[in-house]
Length: 459
Image (cartoon, rainbow, N blue to C red; front, side, top):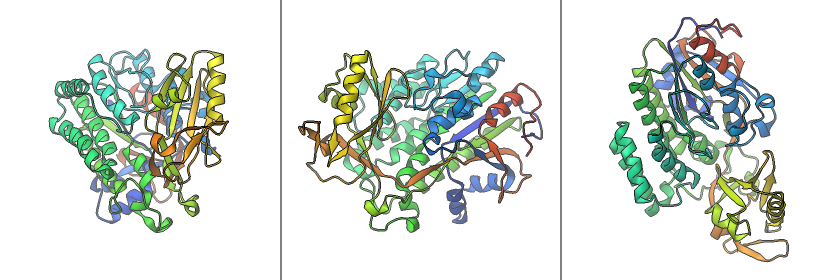
């Protein structure tokens, strides 16, 4: 990918899993003016990654983008497993060249020995590596809400610490008020809870804006995830043509359209960044991967996603005590268990594999990382109130609907083809965009900022 000129800075806007057909459809409706402009003026390419579906996950693909290594090379398979990474991430490689970075929310990332800069981890990170330390209260606040899908209240002390951080970094106080108002309001109107993901993205964007305007780093990232969540869960409210018209989401109103809401917000964020980035700054907008409509389970009422209300409490109720196990809630229906001994491992595997509901296994259990058990809620069918979770002796453990919440009905499916816009004059055919490996982003960044010639491929 040969660039037309040299740049002093790079901003990489990571809009997780955004899908070009949706953008095109919204532009045709007179929406997304900034996307319309970059579609016309910027270089557009597709990125390619993994072909095995189980490997087309954002927590795999973004490690690929940040390391320049394929999954077979970096071996990071689970969210929050990045502590096992044996390769340098792009901000680590730049740090070795004395180039500082501002990393805001990038998925499955770790700071490690990076020098200086600013690092704000994704909300699913196991360890709060926020740097500098004064960002930790705000990260902890956002992380606790995202991991819990905002099912709990915010302790006053945590809220005050988060507000102090907002003031220090000159974040708009009205945004913080809006976030607090949303958390309160959705308790009265639960079907508005979907907006919270967008407000968290908006807060990350404001953190990014503040940091970019007050620093002189060479490399910046901003990772946003709300639209990926909306596509997975609410596509049928955007375009019902591919779906069963008799299936409705349990957690939003029929006239709500989270996807349009999310893309319009992203369009405004992009516009802000374009406005204040100067001509010596290369802007990269990458999706990592994308989504297409998912209709495979329509005949059985859709694919329902269930999430535990309280992972720790549930684990203890089935005999996995906090002395021998540490519980890590992850995205959607996933969670992880860290065990201390082989005996504890065997006990957990036995208990989890023996739980069932309506004659089907409750959990899918995998071991891809030493010392951890990855757990996914495998049951996806509808469930009437009062149906019990049973152990191997057919003893009732709990009522399913009392410990799980139906958070969504799947509507979006991963595709390994990603979208890439680069803020250089458009010289390619958007109808048949060139495809480049997602790994190329690492080399493009490193060689651009270290003033080396980039010759891997041509645009």
